[in-house]
Image (cartoon, rainbow, N blue to C red; front, side, top):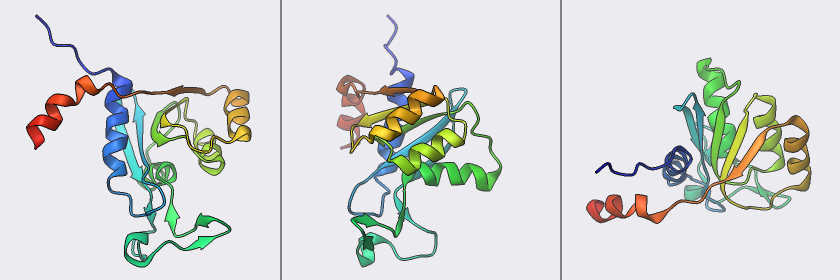
Amino acid sequence: MSKERIPWPQYFMAQAVLLSLRSTCTRLEVGATLVKDRRIIAGGYNGAVSGDDHCIDHGCYVVDGHCIRTIHAEMNALLQCAKLGISTKDAEIYVTHFPCIHCTKAILQAGIKKIYYLHDYHNDVYAMELIKKIGVEIEQVSLDQKYFEKLLSSAI
């Protein structure tokens, strides 16, 4: 009897959830995983610029209702690819929360072909319009507990 394997979208979303645990902004813990040809090419989480103070240590730096100290998870993953010279054309992104308008624009400009997200979060109407207009696919993923029960019971 063969064991049922976790579906790819849940597998990569679980990676994004794991990355979110490294977030240093206390306002929202977000993780993002960039995938190309079923291979992880980068990951990111909400956090300060390398070498700067972290929100968890010094508080959020809020201007007009937004923490400007932190770089969003999606942007961190995209910037990691830029820094290392990895193409994001036709890649997919798995993000724990629906991307903000600024991250959506960066994702689209980077050539991402599909956006997977776990949680709705201030879903921007213009972001949805852009995604549709550019022709990028979007899909909400649900994590099925049955794939994580064994992992959680053996980790404790």
